[in-house]
Image 1 (spheres, one colour):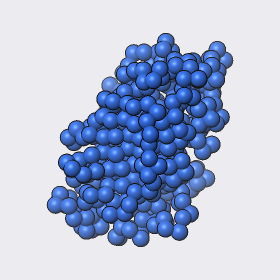
Image 2 (spheres, rainbow, N blue to C red):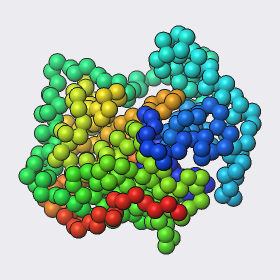
Image 3 (cartoon, rainbow, N blue to C red):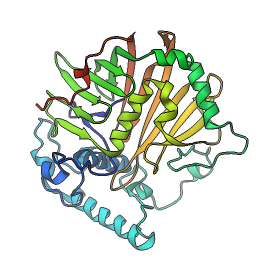
Image 4 (spheres, rainbow, N blue to C red):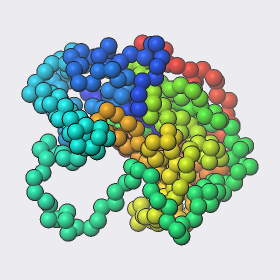
Length: 370
């Protein structure tokens, strides 16, 4: 959906995480782009940015909790040291040592384990939480399939049928959509989505006479660009888990191929979203972490997807909620998607969709560097 634009000093940049370097000779690491990198060396730029988002979400603070606020647009002083940044480095080393010494190197503890969205970890139990309603915990691990659950294939077949059936889905080979993009605490922007089967997708968010953000997946590679805005890295190549997410979004633009999009399918226990019964289906793109798909028990339509992307300090979830399904060329498509991630949320509303429209191949090319 997004890859993923967050509002930073009124401008769009990325919040992304990956599972490792791309191996490309032109893929720069964090210390080659940013100054004063001490604890997060040797990781790609998008993994570095995602790690910053993980810190922000774990402590419930914005970037300027650790970094000097430079609302004027210069990023030079973001590298300056202060007490919070020095403490963060010590915390990174402490958590790493604890996982190494007590959990055989497995990442059992993260920043979020203790902070839970607060600057200071709590030291006593919360009575209200203890005796309150149980909170649904999104499974970030593979779950066991209940004995009486329908199979993943049955749920996916119902979904395909609810959208219009396999033949009609196969007849949709491309589309161009226009609509709006509304980021958190930001103006509503005009946007366009271009998609071509089986797995190409591009989204362009427009500003006042210019393009604020371009996110593209060409079927093999992906990029996110902020070509005319003042951000520290105006063009970022997607790698690892973020690239997997871009591919999945492109494939789900033509959901007749959903069964081939992931592997190791299984179902989880029924639950509810917004007081509607839903069925959980899990698959995986990389064999390590699940992609959670929630289908309305009555209509069979997909209402939520949650996927996880790795970083050196923890898993970062991205949640996409789908709504307002309408027919386009005899196929139902969600006209509204709410994308939530660790440090932002955006609502995408489609107002016009042209099915099987001609889409120039250049729409999926690597954006030009500013």
